[in-house]
Length: 278
Image (cartoon, rainbow, N blue to C red; front, side, top):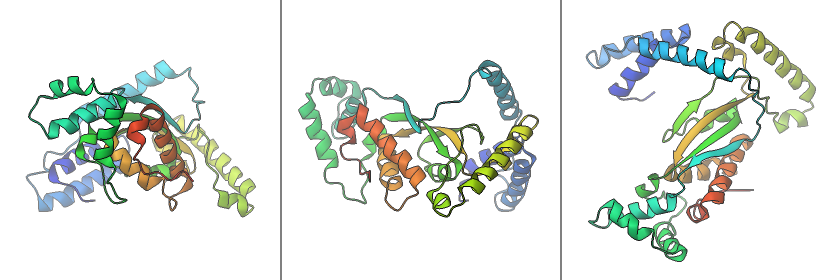
């Protein structure tokens, strides 16, 4: 891990406030190591009652309010929230950079523009991009929030995209699991399904008493949910990288579906996103 002292201090505080003893131990050992190098910068990292108690109390109230609902939705990607005025916000930001006018005054002018006029400006901003280029920073001034259902193994690759906001649910077996084509081709589907059933049974038993620790018995093939909010500039990068032909089929599907959802609501902005749909 490469991290600056400020971020490390908060990371240590979260680890020391985690309900699992293993995470607390990692936090303790990490703090000991850090104190040898920067004793004044991480010395205040410690158990935080607010973090610990808030998580525990929120978990209780959520379970109470949602206990009658069944998690039976199975769409891998759902666009749950987005900037409906994304085009205007990005165009206004592009104009803002090269003028001395206020954002609001520019926004009024942008809203008067026709679709063709807007398309021309977006073309100028994006059409010269090569395979290694990224859009300008002004494309960060809009957001898209996705509810994603994906197997845990593929999730680990999506999780690595740090320029975003993620809210992760705990690992579980309630959403079912993915079956790799290689397992079927090798003739081991029956054995594979039996093992997944045993893991699911163990999880259900353990989770009744130890809902957090029970995650240890969940194989990476089982699906989990994550809520991710990306800005558009980061989505250019995510979709191009994760839809690539060399990628894993699980996260390639997610990247492709994310692209399709953006294209539905903002075809003009999606026009220059590089995506492999094969």
